[in-house]
Every structure is written in C-alpha cells, then in structure tokens.
Length: 401
Image (cartoon, rainbow, N blue to C red; front, side, top):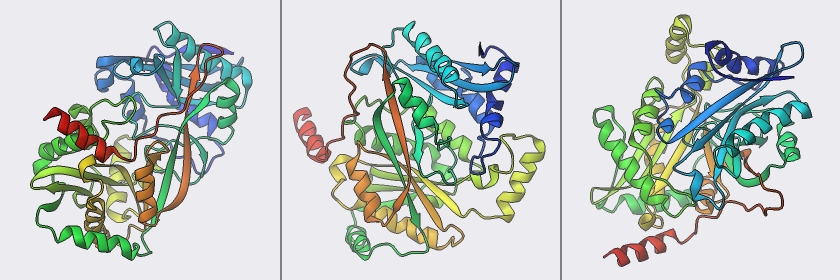
C-alpha cells in the first residue's frame, strides 16, 4: 500500500474520487459537491486557515487503485482549550482493511503530534460543526446535505483503532403531515399575546442585520458550553452565500424582546434532493439542470441546521413562538412533508427536550470520537451543558453589573 499526501490538482482530484470506490454499490449515499469539499481545503476560501492548518492523504493498494483517504487539521482557537491539546481528522473513507485503516489514522496522528497535539477528534470538519461532523452509526437512510453518511463497518474501524466515544449527536425527523402537539400551541399563543415579544423572518435586504442578530444570540446562548468560541461573521456570510440558491426567507426566524435579538432558527431545504443527480459535479450542464429541478420539482424535505436561545429567555416560550410562525409558512408549502432536526448533542439536554415537545421522532445517530495519543490516559466524554444556563447567565449579569 502507498500513502500519498495531497499536493497538487491531480492528487486533490483523486482525493475526491475515493468515494467512487467506497460507495459504488451504495444506493443511499449522495456525493457532496466537489467544489464544496475542495473549498474546505482552500486557504483562500476557508477562514479557518487564518487560525489553523490542514493536510490530507490518499491511499493506494499495490496495483495503484484508490482504497482510502483522510484529512487532518488543527483549529488553534480551540485546540489548546481542552485538557490535552486536541486536533481533528475527517473526510475519512476506506475499504474494510485493518492495514489500510492503520496507515490513514496513523498519518493523522503523526502529523498532529508533530504539531503539539495530544489527541484527535473525528470524524469532524475543518469548519463549523453544522456540516460533515460525526460518524453515522444508526439510521442509514437518505442523508440531508451536509450530514455525514458512511458504511456501517466504519464504527468498528474507529473503535478498533482506539477511538473512544466523546459525544453523541441525535437527528430527529418531524412528519409535517401530522399536527403539532396542542400543548405547544398554547404556549405559543401566550407568548404571541405579549407585545414586548416580536418575531421576524429573514430577508435579503437586511441580511447583515440578521447575521449580526444571529451572532449575538449564538455567542450568548452557547457561552456555557465546553470549549466555546464566538461565531465569526465571515463564516456566516460564506454559509449564507453558499445557500442562496435554495434558501427560503420565510423559513429562517428570529425572536426579539423589546427589539433585542433573543432567539433564532435556521431551516434550509434539503439540496440533496437535487444534488443526488449530479455525482458531485457542478459544471455548466448541471447548473442548468439545477435551475430546472429547482423550478419543476419542489423540495419535499428541509433541515433545521441550527437554533439558539439567549439563556435569560429559555423559559419564556420563545421557541414555541418561532415554531408557530414557522408552521404557518410550512402550511403554505405543503410540498415540504418532512423536516430534519439535526443535530443535537447528548451534551444539550434542553434542546433534546424541545425536539420531543414538537413531536419529532428518532431518525439518525452520529458519534464524534476522540483518540488520546498517550497510553493509559483516561478518556472523558464531552461535558453536559447545564440545564440552568438561564440562572447562570443571570448570576453572571449581576456580577458584571
């Protein structure tokens, strides 16, 4: 076997094409756009290179056939905030072969150790965690765009190498042909009757304002999570630009209290309903086809990629108010019959409770693993976000005053 570092256009193209070997007989797999994957490893397009670095490899068998790939990276804004400096690995694909797996994981470990890392998380993304994050271990059905899909045998490959469970990511599905629980609407009506609470959907004319509101809510809402780092506005702008062709303004909602942003929800139609026809390519012909499919075949699925509530308002029912407005817009789009709520970690019990309260049911389970490099170290799971973050926020505000 031969391990080759990606160093030019040819090896980069071969890195992308490894999936043709792994998923040749897999009906559910939908290849992400090549340009999307390549942008992650392009320092001119991925702002994470401003505070990190990445590399990747392909693996050939003795006849020169592609049989695997992997990437390793370091986000220096987060790497040194853990108990041990921790890098990342991802975009792993491999045949079911122990020697091949050892070569790929070993390359990541060696590269990360040479840069001071003592552990690696995987499979993760060299970017935000809303896309390409975690190993699918349960629920091998159609993946929404950005959600990792992999063969079931990958779990054994990771665990046999010594990766340990770090946190679990749960995805639930909401059947839009069924009504929301009545109790949920009673809370919504109570909130909507209060004039100090207002709700607005996103619009392109005020895109910068809404992105600023999203950052304000996210940064305050996630401040008590392990290894929290504020959102970068440039990342939000890039994500918005990438999603522009499919984004529906009325499916992204914000809540305000006396004009201050306190909550948001982002729902985006599932681009995979179209991209499944393109085998990862977005050439001129497929751009024309994309416009055709977008017009002639309305989306039937959508994905809630992220939701946040400022801790002070997490018991105020604003989530119900957002879902009330969202439900009204979805009723005007009966073609959307399935909503994916993805993903929520086991470190976030409040959001899991919210999924249950709207009547969502289990769909998929991903696991993010951690591999400690030093033998004998005890592995720990990700810390749980405290249920009382509202009270913590109030105490923090009192101290600052």
